[in-house]
Image (cartoon, rainbow, N blue to C red):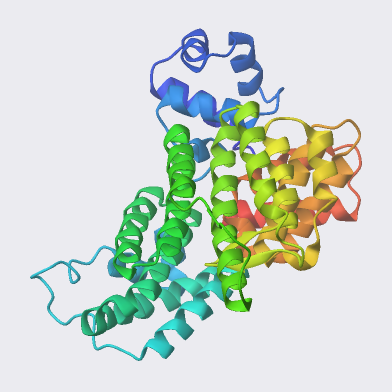
Length: 409
């Protein structure tokens, strides 16, 4: 646990030949702040992390200890097969050679996509990595055979792959795959599917540290599908179509709020949340999960907790988390919310035991998912250090969990 955020900042600074005051000037923070961060005497807020990463010319998650883990994961379940499937030339016009195999029925293809999403939301990344190569090649072959009708499942197979690549520490490959997904979604003729892929692209850009572009992509996608329902739904089918539309639209607004929070722009966050709240008022039966996006009152509360944690407003983060309905959240979303709670508790006096409990709850959702979360590793290490004088059973459990996460890097 000696590999801390402070040591990573210092190492990256020295690699670039910068003195502390030069890094501070580039990042727009004080030299004292850089010194305190490097000595581990001050916690790193998310906006400061992005500012330092931009000044150092690195991806923000590198300061959390993130690095590409494709080779390590590949020794287990063949994630390298997925990388090869994603980087193939077999889907380029005029270069197809039948390597993708034959098409499958649309029902089988959609069932494979649904199974992939179940694995993803449970944090079963090794199983998902083993599942995706055959799914992608089958989807490509089926699109060539049947055209646009197979484009939606193909787009979602790429979406799943992009999401997984982010967790695997391969943001550049995730970006390339998300773009392929967008092209497939465009061919599907479904504007909501295209917007959903734009949300994934925004998330990838956020992890790449491109905050302005991440916000722009999500905002533009939301504007492109802004609801203009001129009348109440005439029947159940129309009502269902309207609520699906609002799910995607509201989710994109929350996607735009995330990079705004990371940039420390509280006014922009508040604006996006106000607009999203208008859409959420239609969700009287709880949250919805459409196009593999989540939206509704609970998602609003969860994202508010995240934004307030990022903006270093811990009291408001914990208050928002209390409005979350557990039944409305898919497993790793529940885990992510507890990482946000742990981040907030670590900023509150006397709340380290609460942070420990929140981290263990996140770990219990999916140890495999947690091992890929830099926030878990760093918050966990900080919570263990803050508990040195007394180490009850919960802290010993967290020490073991963080040790396993660090060992898996």
